[in-house]
Length: 275
Image (cartoon, rainbow, N blue to C red; front, side, top):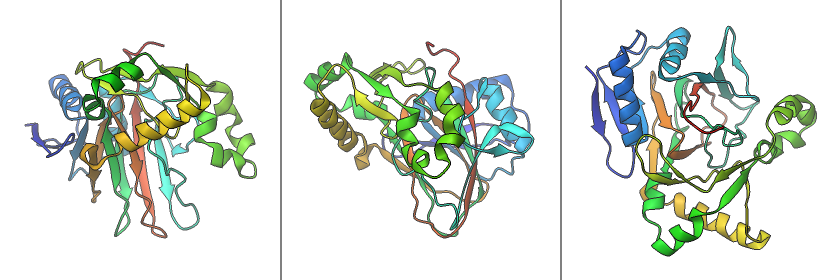
């Protein structure tokens, strides 16, 4: 039986009572979605989950979304691979909302730790809903009517600068031109308002001067990454993290070099989002 154990702080819960290598009932999947909307990040441990079960778990929660720039598991094109070691260190160093550079960013992601370093390699999650709640009314009013431009090219600028990088990523760039999203969104399930801040992909805030955009982005970064909004997810063998991409941003802690860290992710489309 599914049980939810709430974490202390602004976000996060641990889920027990499930075997994710077996199909879940419709009622259990709905309970997971409700728990996700409430707690924003779910940790599920002790799961010896196959690639097929990983894919099917995500597909049971909604259509799956493929990333345009990352490799996938052979035979499982819906499972993205993040594999880093001495020869291939992680380039993901900034806080971000997954795929905010798309017109319809995903509902959430389910990440499985396949090969974990002996030390380090945690993931940090920050609640953009709690960050909104704590803003003074005057700042909420100032931000509520603004939009921001999100850009794949901006987020992958280091990779584009590498030899052959632009040629490798050009199809993804062609398929994903810059998009504009509101700076403040309302969560469709919880009803909470959230600051839609994604440092990696957010190029600028619109409707203000360049200098004001720079200042606001700096403010948003300082505000949203305060410790009181952040959950540190500590990976262990057979751990899974499921997060709500509509309410949190995240960043890996790249402190494990030169050890290897291989993660596999399915991403769930937000079928209810406006295109």
